[in-house]
Length: 429
Image 1: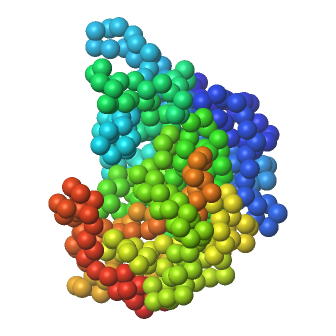
Image 2: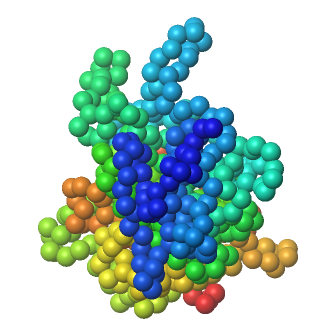
Image 3: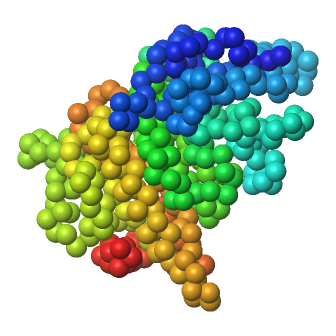
């Protein structure tokens, strides 16, 4: 039987380094002296699966989720047999540097074949059905609280034997030094928020959201130490309008072998601001929004939600801690508790932002929500944790399509004003 046998599991909660296979003791966040239990295993093709349990008997370790994967999947790094019958070593995805912008662009053509809007009874994120025959689900147990696994259709992948990180010698594409090629040697994980196919993040109980916060923090910590990783980005895409291919409530975490263009721009501005004023740009933005007050939409003991003064999207909100925190692992127990409740409140307001004019019913908001964290290496001290949430829905039944100047030149034009967005969210309080 493929996959990790039950007797291969460890009594200790562990995560596995996906490159070397060595064991690392997990560092779950603290929740009143205890935290969720992280239990790692391997799927049939070698990808890591982590169960995150906050309910008994799994939280205490009195029982263990199913650790074996019965699917007849080949090892994901197995040699590839070509059309001519010749066998060649597996080669991971690559990325190319755009010489005009300096941006890295991963080439992930295999993602064209990923699962697209499956029926509820064949969703790969749902738990296995008790007593059912084999199905191609990613989570072998019949129940789970939260689960994390390496994406089967990963755009970034660390392949054994391939170099990772900036130390990789650049390869010239087509013999031209202008075009640099490197392995896209990162990692993509899926975080499944609930076993309920019809749930959404905003309908989860606050205790489960607290577990997800711990999961984001623990996975950020684990992924940040992988070789060559420069940035960790945890995010959720919600809604068909956003392009979601699996409606089951889930998010993703990318461990990137480069710093993304947006983060590069923020670091550039933060560095220039520090050199000019001696201050922290991201901290001073939060302070300025609090002083102005007009765009602040939600405050708690530890968190502030506001519409940024130069918001680009039809609906956009940032959620930031009051204290300077670099990343999710740096949050205290109290800040994590407060975040779970505050984020739920914010999502529930956003799901009432638009109303169907025909029925008067709220329209669930399609959105992208992502955590901006300090980078792993150079420039880390310039970072400050904050969440950015935005939607492409500009009115009931109307999406914001990027205009030519926006798509072609990244020159944004807002369809509304930040003050209008904030006023609507304040009204919903």
